[in-house]
Image 1 (spheres, rainbow, N blue to C red):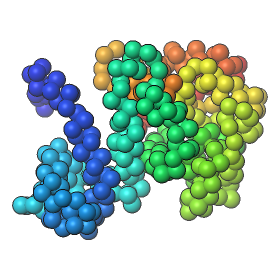
Image 2: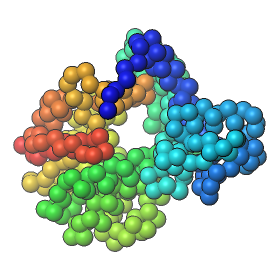
Image 3: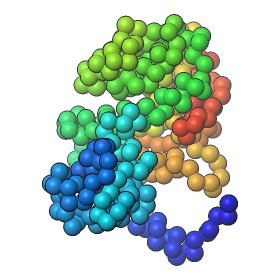
Image 4: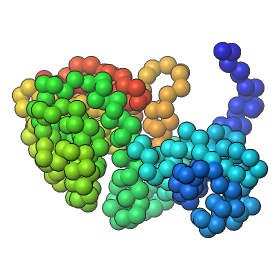
Length: 336
């Protein structure tokens, strides 16, 4: 298939106006439009009445989103789901609705001060909201719930890729550090009946995890513990850090890794699940996510060499980096 290369001015306009699409997706997610179409196409008037929107304006939104493959105008003013729009359904096991809402609210506003972050190297979020991102989530339960739901949706996509890629057969006890509602550890335990696990996160996060672990059929083999991963971690032979280290600078990340090192058995290992930045100019989501971390937090995405150095400074030896079908990679390391 021949790839049509856009003229530079057209390509640049598409880049400059990218937020038009992202904010349109946010509005559709916030209004729950995909949920309203789960039983089949409806007119824009019917959808507007159901989600309390201005009918003519909602039609314009749906028409624009249909032009980029989110929803489809099946006939005049009637819209239905596409495979992309289906991911915005809240009852989809891999739902990305909360992710779209999370990206479209406070995080979107932080990007409005991107120039300041690039000039200073500090998170625009802190300047805009007067608190660090995670403190803000703790102080604003609705935003915190959206974040946790969004991470659960992301974990559902990564979990299947992890269990089909990595062999946990010689692990006895695994700790999912900062594991949220338990999506990843539940998938691992369900695939390996001999294993036991510990879901470790902040108290308000793990409080709602038991119901999910029960529904997943692994609650009898998975303990939930609350705490701070900057302090003490429970003992195990395998530790998982899934999109944890990219939230933190090297000093804080080293502390987390050192706490894993201190708690693990002598034959222990650690698995870091992150977007590992490749060298070269090819497009890669992690290069943009790295900027996102700058807007929100003190963290960053890292290359394989940077993970090697970070792990070495915490007493680990990087053994291999395993790509997965999700785009994330498994960075495996053992105690030195």
